[in-house]
Length: 166
Image 1 (cartoon, rainbow, N blue to C red):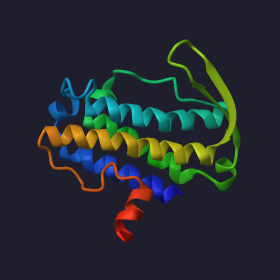
Image 2: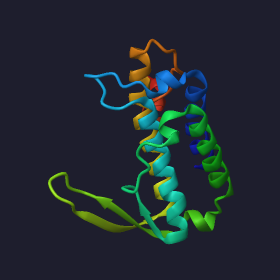
Image 3: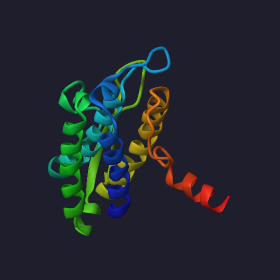
Image 4: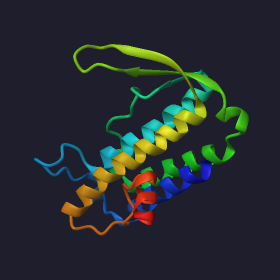
């Protein structure tokens, strides 16, 4: 499971190495309302929510770092990914099985927060799945920018299996 997360993060690193700061921060309306950098920051926020949740016992995906240097600098995003990789590689089986609380808003009409039990392993898996989902959007933004990106960027594991066996 950890190796799969590292592969997902490698896709992010490959993308970040290929993009200029201008491309990373460009917003392309009306198709998109946020930049690739905003999506990357959002992806990394989810991994940091898991990291912070291990110590506090509460993973809260709604605490985000909107704006900021990771959103505007591919180099800062790469530095954050390096930190996340170190965290993931150091996770023990005991930490992965740790039960923690998950807090998340569940309504778009009014503020309603659900708090449920989960495990660190489940949330690490979710962070990776969430990253792949946002990579697909980053890939679409990149295509509009005529930027060549890795073919597998934004392809979910089950879709990759289907494509290999199709």
